[in-house]
Amino acid sequence: MDTASFSTASTTIESVLRKLGLDPKTAKVRDEEGTRAWGLLRGSAQVLLMVNGADEGAWVRVIAPVTKLPAEKDRAAFFLKLLELNARAMRNASFGVLNDGVVIVSERPSEGLDANEVEQILKHVGALADHYDDEFIKEYGVAR
Image: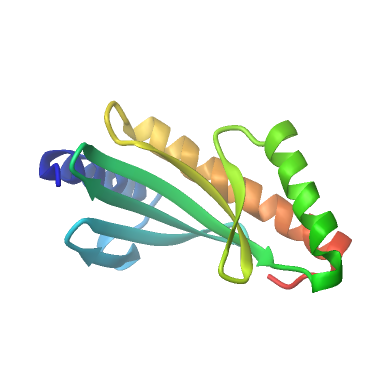
């Protein structure tokens, strides 16, 4: 693992959290070799910021749960909608399915990452999740 990249990305994320008025130590939800994560709320959306170490450097991932999956009978139409939104409406983020829920994810290598970009990605992913949870609840009757 590239420990320098991992450490630099972690420090950058913690500086953004402090700028947003959060204590990085309190927001930290995971800290083990190769993975560090912080959780926070953006509107009604929970957002997780992660740094993952790899041999070639570190990666920063921002992920936000949106809703649970709809009933089986509605999933084909729902998945088609997610794919259409990925192609048409999403910028620097995409929908995915994780376990029994829909998430929004943005990920990039940490090389060249600065605090302004971390803040933009965090706010963007949080705003998307906060917007689409209401839309999907109304249209598909899913739960948060």
